[in-house]
Image (tube, rainbow, N blue to C red; front, side):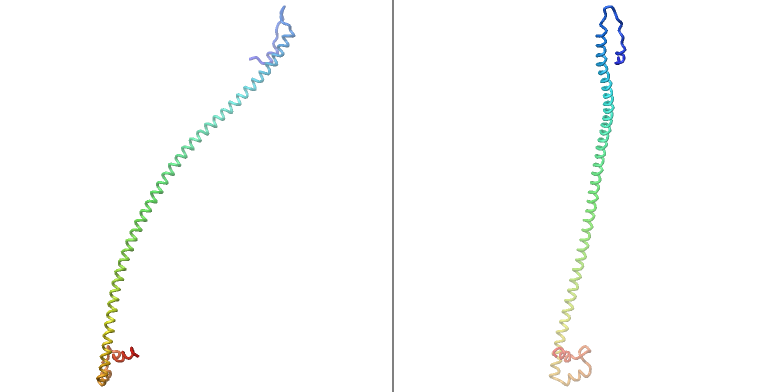
Length: 188
């Protein structure tokens, strides 16, 4: 490709009936100016194309990097999702196991407490019966005691001398006091 300097240095030989030198030089001068302008514009455009190609290469590299990063992010997200799903299933399974064990333990504790309650109910019933028997025994003793007091009173009324002798000989009721004295304490 010719440069503007090449065009400037072109030399035409003169012939007999050749072109007019001034017109050729004027034309060459304009051609040189236009060509120089086009030549510089071409260089600028080539530089711009090269710069744009470099930028395009960089953008393509960035695009490829971003695409790879996006694919990696998608794969990582999928792996994280799968791991989280597995972890969630494991946690649910463990929670169900703990709940089942807790339910079983509560059931066993409840059964044990019901057995203990049944034993306590039986003991309460046994003690109630024992206490009832004890109270009935006390009532019988009290009834007998009242009967003895009546007998002593009758003995003292009918035979004061016999009552005095019994008191003196220590034949008192159950070794503590005579039924008459016990009756006097109760009545007095």
